[in-house]
Length: 172
Image (cartoon, rainbow, N blue to C red; front, side, top):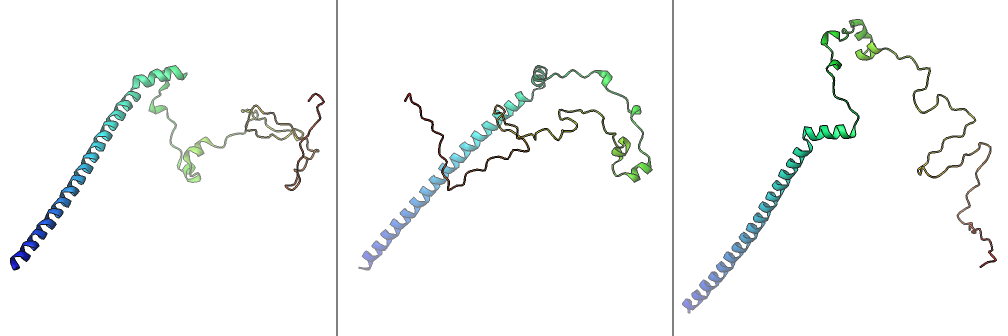
């Protein structure tokens, strides 16, 4: 009887051990598949990086940039006469000028004189009788000028119904 009980215990232990080994094998298979997937993704990303580096090499090619600059800009080549020697640079500002002004370059430049002429598209002064400019989102839409003595019509209240303007057409 004891032998029979011992046989059942050993068979049960073998079944539990087999189930445990199967679980470990299954987990290791899942981990191996996950590792293979990560390596594949890593290889794919390295290929993408290599492709982007190759594309960057083409885009960064100085001959290509020079051809685009000639094609789309009005730049001219640099002439050797555009460079100057260092001995023609202005002298350092005096210590008094540096002490009087925190900005030594601004002290050298000084205060610019106001211009007598207008240098932009905005007139020097806007006459008082001119209507105020109204910014427009759509450039094709005309904005009517508003006279200062005309007040706009008040908007109808929310509870008032706005009746559409219906004119009777005898042809219908």
